[in-house]
Image (tube, rainbow, N blue to C red; front, side, top):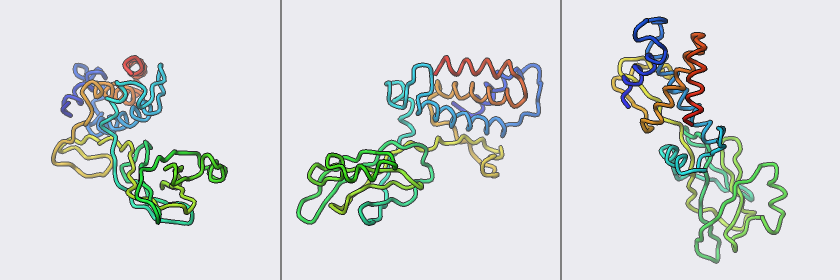
Length: 233
């Protein structure tokens, strides 16, 4: 969907096409509210906070809606005493999905490794548990997320090879040519349109109107769009 259509739809739902009320709402404010709407919608639906509690892969619709944000990227890891740690998470990191890698030791060839994400508070217990501690023979280990880094535990039994992080990246912010980007303070020379399907962009528009309606204390628009967003979630 083109950005000019988004601007038109937002103004229409704020009753601004005929009345010109609140004509001081500028394009950059709509851009900011729309980008906020993208982020809010993604967080809510990845978590599954809706009427049927659907998370990111709880239905084919969720998978289809969210797949555009999934990204896999090789990561650099440093060997420490008993574990490996990555460098900081990518700048466009939004939410965890998984980390995959292979393992090798001095006597056996490289083999696939199953890595289970666990809570940081349980690491000491799991590293001592014979059934859950890192094992090269079984090709299993555990990982945690801390300090913007991923930790994969080895108990010094094997080496980590070819780690790849799969995660949800930040949604791409829209930009309008000639309109100041409120996030960077620069003025883009070309449009950046939303990467999502048009039916999802329609939901972002409702979210945008809900936000702007609250900003200008127009409770009717804010409440109406809030109901529409939830009904179409």
